[in-house]
Length: 293
Image (cartoon, rainbow, N blue to C red; front, side, top):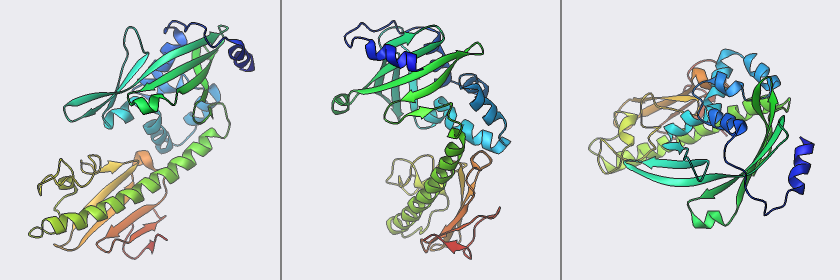
């Protein structure tokens, strides 16, 4: 890999860009659009491939949620287009019936010796202000076991996929990230409950979390939370949220890790008090559990 980095250092900055084709680029696009983990795994280093295969099934499913980029972004209204000419990828976001272009990704450099390749990409955001920041990402690949595999990504943050501790750090960060997202979502729900009850005093608390979503302005589509939090089965970032309306003024919400998000090890509880409580035991959290500090 150092050989390729040296080649890039010697490359003239005004050299013409390489054609936006090739097996390495095809491998990246295959990973980007993958619909299953086997497709992802064949393009990562063999040691990382073996480490993921050795994980418990629940942890593998959790990793799949993060690695299956196309499916994850599709749930957020993001899609990719691959033009025949021009940019390698056009990233778009859909909002309602409107599709807006978000960014274009161009291949600026391709340096290869047939066994190792360095691809440098230029990201051109739609926003003119962002374009002034000249976003660049470099991806290093190696041809191992008859497949092009990603070994390093350099951009705003560097990632080495052959780092022996990468998977451990990923699982730990996913655990804390999912728990932080669950806590944030519970706070969002609590705020939405207060707002809903104040806006519709004849109803009080909502009958379902579903009515908290939508465009806003009506009791059935209050527009107080995002679509993920307002759509059955009410899941987000590896947690499922269960709401119970006890009365016009009382409710409970429980957040439990899903089977695919079980890298997280805490369940949470909240109610009309706004206090969030947690347990590390394999059960629903309750009003008797310890509050978050």
